[in-house]
Image 1 (tube, rainbow, N blue to C red):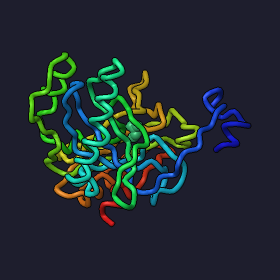
Image 2 (image 1 turned 180 degrees about the horizontal axis):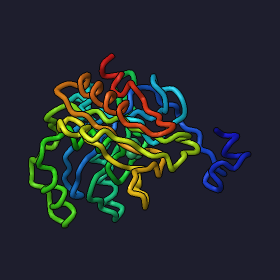
Image 3 (image 1 turned 45 degrees about the vertical axis):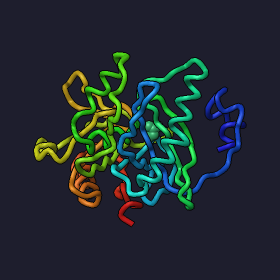
Length: 262
Ligand code: GLY
């Protein structure tokens, strides 16, 4: 990676300087907090799967799948995340004159000793985490989101951490993803795939051409999300649905949620 960036100019100017950081081992956890700048509520966390291939092998991607809820996200861990990561970050933003409203996404690594380390923050929902989180949550998020967007304050004591069922999202990626995704392949989706209400397809890298046919237009093509009472059932349904969608060069992981099941 260093050679590609520094010698081969793989990332252009953005890769001309390299920062070497501590290598973090453990389980990834995406913790999203909804905040009005003062108060916040933590959404049910999700686990992303960044590597392209089963078993967490292959190149890093934007995310090949996610599931929610996550067993490693215990109430005790989320208290630590709230008190030691989310709250101080919001306080610091405010102190610097940049109070933040919206979704604060903390990308964490939960170390083997159970302590969380921050890898990154994002000012948005995660992809594919959002597909799993929002599908697993009970209805009722929209009024809170609207209130925050319109400048209001969150009602005190609002909690958003509950799930009503398990959700697993399997990402279908284009041929060549992540380095050189190939666009143009025609996508075929069985008509009844979403009929049961247990499967939801989230379109990302898709487009409808002048001929009306659905085609691949980006690296991560579709988020195939399944809901079920357990992660195991949701993972199986998501995998079966992912199998039933076809386009040339389709890539996807068959093991989303494997750490939870192990
Ligand atoms: N899945 C990682 C992200 O949305 O940044």
